[in-house]
Image: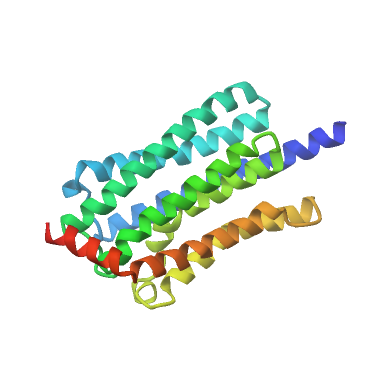
Length: 238
């Protein structure tokens, strides 16, 4: 019994540290982007600021939840978990609104076409919610739950890596796949942890890698479809 408790605490301590690392990486990605003059926060619509605050809230909650699980405060962990589910739904709504608004206001970064950008955020948000739902369903299975929550958060990291990959690379057809590889590398850190502590990679992490790259496939397919192209043109025309 004592060895099981020690293993649980060791596992949870790792995920707590990884959550902090993800927070630092995402904040650095957006901060350096702003400092390099690629975004003007002062003129951004209010919805963009709300979206940013909500995303920081998610990352902060991800850290807190890992800490609570590791400290054994499961009662508060469960209550905050449902608050997190509500926040996730809000993130999806505000994130989709920001995407549509960017096209209507002609604020789409020049590296993207309007149809691609129109699908980029919403598709990732849809997969985020799907993985989160799976994590909630498996909440009584600790190993599945904590890893699926990690996967859901890594899906949301796509915009951060989009700001870290150099422009000449991100603008190539391989750019999104390089982003995906970087997202998968975050899961790779957890895979190495699993190899070291469990002797094998947990299936949730393999599913996570599949989800990351499936996002890219779905975005590309939908962005090339006639209805999405027409929708983007309508939004851009006002």
